[in-house]
Image (tube, rainbow, N blue to C red; front, side):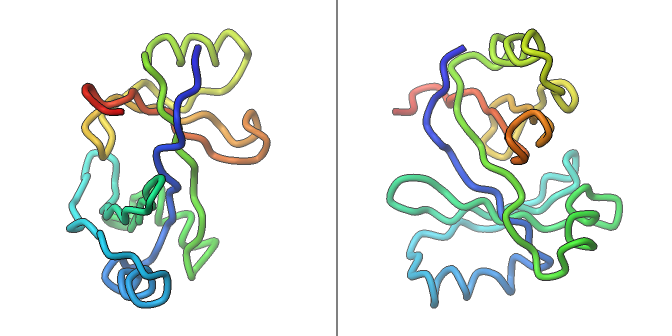
Length: 139
């Protein structure tokens, strides 16, 4: 398995609409995408571009969202996960499983339209870690 670049840092928020002014007015972000729904994953998402990565703002889609549980524990939101690119999602999943890491579910299509999976924080130094297949034609 070959680890690729840091693609994004996921930041959970109770409201993307309320978070955007912070990223624009305080952090100086000038490239903020339109929020969109990912009902299959139970989230609303918005990407904030930075010079070397993205911030993924994540809002619960509804009360059944896994992000709703995070927000219940952290009402103001906060860092939720980091995401690294890998050249081959199936190879990466098999590699982590062979190391005894707890892969959380099967690969599914993520917010960038490529396959993703998560590895449990207890197997990743305390950080929920997402792996996504590098989008074709990127970098």
